[in-house]
Length: 332
Image (cartoon, rainbow, N blue to C red):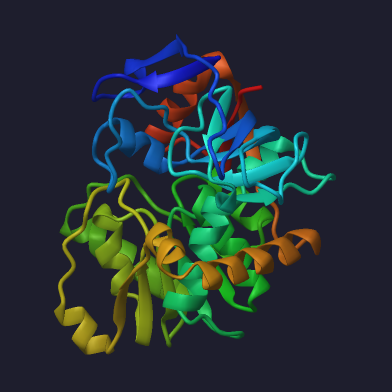
């Protein structure tokens, strides 16, 4: 089988298409014939050895897959050859076949494509955990979403609206603003490119404040970080919740006096660890997502599909922060 492997620390240009033996399902495992693999920002970090987890090389990036069960191992009774699946696997998805623990898989509805199935769980799973468990978002509250046209950003816009919030989407271009509006954002803000000098940072804070209203934001969803974080925090409301989701713009240094003045919380969001520590709560969230998906309240926006041979190009586009919605590599 073919596999796109990271063999050395570096960017997408270091990935190598390689032939490997087909995997065999061990006891309690299934082998999945991968049809589609979504690309997310952790795929950029993991091949640069900058992610929380550093798998031994060689390894394939790609943490979200959809495909078909190819074989089942001893003791597996809930899955059969030919079943359509979707799931999150941490890494290893940019391969034609992979042996996985079936507890990480979900049934892909017949009416959904493999690309859609590969694009749902990680971004929406992260976001529903962030908004409900960490942000305690309530109907009628106001939320600011940074990086609102990316995968997790659009998920936050959609889920925020599904939960009854007023959503302000902050993005870097009119094209991205249009995508956020299409996802349901009530208002959009277009910001400039960091780094920001002091005056530019202050001006951005005023932009955020003007859109948030006098009371400020109840929840701020930040998958961007960098110089965008402090201006956003300055616009938070009394006892607001600032959700730390990711750092493609860099790891910010927040002035903690702001948390005292606003009596607000800065909350880390680590969905992978949450799912491992409390699988029942995560399962309930995923069931909630499937209901919202079925009812048309959420829908992964797959904006570009890459052939397997160009899987590295998908990661390069994600690294350049040029993606709107989800990027998917068609493997099978």
